[in-house]
Amino acid sequence: MKQFFLALLCVLAIKANGQDTVKRRIMTTRESSFRFKLDTNQIVYDEQGKALHYYQYEKLLNTGDYTMRLSGSPSDPATKRYLKKLSDQEKNAQFESVKARMVIKSPVLQEGMSLNTMPLTRAINATELDGKVIVLIFWGADCPPCTESFASLNDFLKQIHNPEDLLLLAITPDDKEVADAKLKEKPLLYAQLLSNARSITKDYQLSTYPSFVVADKSHVIRYAISGSSSITLPMLKSTIKAVLFQ
Image (tube, rainbow, N blue to C red; front, side, top):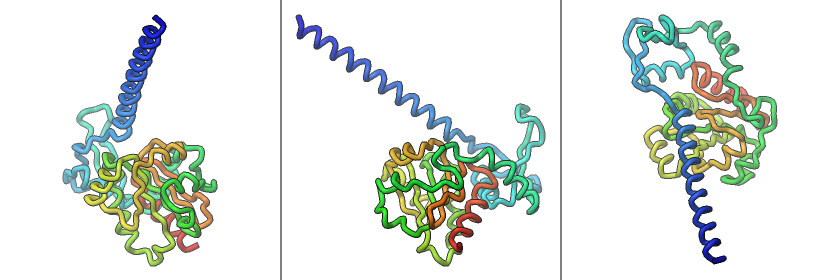
């Protein structure tokens, strides 16, 4: 009889654990779907009224020269989205207004803080970090704003005369095969891939993609932004350039 009850308890425990595993898996899927929810079929119009698809207008937004405007209420199905070119003054004003809403929420990845490099040493040798400007790009293969930023970054990185002073880490929870396939399709210059990196993102208390962090050669964080907007890449490039030549 005792063995019977022990067996019954084991079955119930396995069943409960299985239900919990399924529940966690569903929650993870929902979180992932929410994080990467994006309508890539949305049409946006340029200043001449030409219809642009996602990969066309995202490329223009990544230059930092444009912002997106609405012709009416967001809830009105007839409302159109269009691009507007920004003046330098408008760019600065937009950066200041948008930055506060895009600051990384993680308490350990804030501008002015010293970057804790211990999570990174799970994947790379600590000596590789010494005296380097560290750029962390947190991304996912199924996140279009993440990978569409790479081409614009490549154009910038090609102009850097001292890439040996830069350590660019492309950190993703995806497995190596998936990440490698995406980087073959959407290359990222000078990047060192850290795949299967859920433990690293967990240590940094980060769950939003894309996220960008720049730490100077003393490993002080100078830039920490989550999300994609017209200010994200221009200010990222500006920060990298500034700290490389400090």
